[in-house]
Length: 66
Ligand SMILES: [Zn+2]
Figure 1 (cartoon, rainbow, N blue to C red):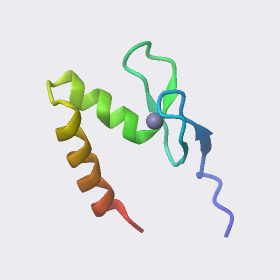
Figure 2 (figure 1 turned 60 degrees about the vertical axis):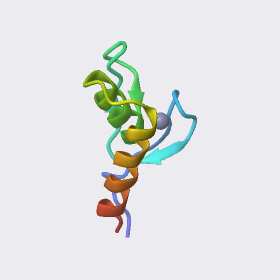
Figure 3 (figure 1 turned 180 degrees about the horizontal axis):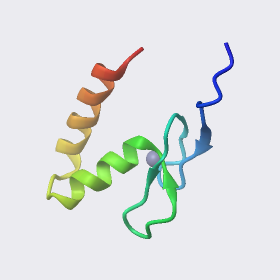
């Protein structure tokens, strides 16, 4: 089934192709990035470091699998 809400783009930060709703980069407020990088930047802004970020993203993925 065709889904017009589905959006595919290449993330300028990680280089992955992603679908779904892009996130807005916090660094310039205009670059569209993938949801994972959006999550990383949000976690970064509250002081959560690399390996903790990956654990949280992994958890999010587990709970959002279709
Ligand atoms: Zn990304």
